Image 1 (cartoon, helix red, strand yellow):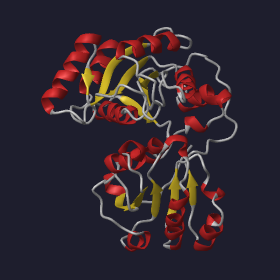
Image 2 (cartoon, helix red, strand yellow; image 1 turned 30 degrees about the vertical axis):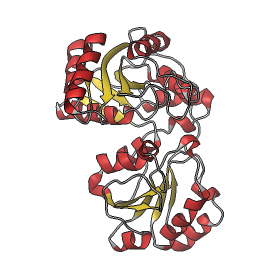
Image 3 (cartoon, rainbow, N blue to C red; image 1 turned 90 degrees about the vertical axis):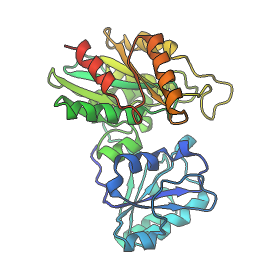
Image 4 (cartoon, one colour; image 1 turned 180 degrees about the vertical axis):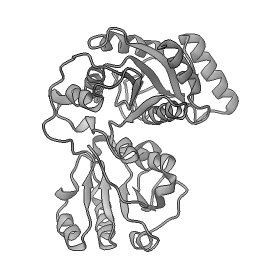
Length: 338
């Protein structure tokens, strides 16, 4: 699934109060800063990307070509009071790109307005037709999957950082996007959580097909095996990916599933154990090769102590993909898969 998004972008944040739900805008601003012209926030927004504040008309005048819906809340819905901003973007001549479960063309009048303005409405969560049921058949090449203790703990950031580190070293590797933000960043991928459940593992097989023996597909993870709402997509992605290796992703200090009170996060050793048990269905040799921790809420000293403690507990390299980089994990992968 290839996606063409015209740059520069105006990142729409609405009045979203939580940074964790603005992960699409934050991810694009971090990984594609050269393509970001500004941000559009409504009164009450709790998220600031540090980009210039712009209306759609101001963004278009500054050269922006697309408005990207930068929020991914629970269920992927579009708040009604945000919709007028989309019509303003269309009137300003901007394409609109969204990764919500609700289609842009389902908004009354928006498609007609876009057609009149000659702009495009691009729904990222629109998987291609004809995806197969998974087969479990062994494929050539290597695969590295990110798995999380919860949603929004750094699976995408870790996968992008690992893929970049591999490529920078001259390794044969590709980032494989499985969510709307990753697809927007990479320009291709499959929106796994929008695939009918019977075809999730097959979609993951399509996403990471046969390749040369030295090739690594670095696959963005989704959800968590311990998530009461999203564990199904996590398991299907794992079975279809057939990972030779996986990296555990976690946010320091988080103890409960976000937005699901009463559901505690697993410990990192528990997640490693359950991932290996479930992953052996399609790859008996699956193994954990590292732990990635979002330590953005910690001081430098606390970060160092946290990462050292996890490494001592697991016997694996432990990193923060932003603060420390992922070189120790790639070193371990190189040593493990000689």
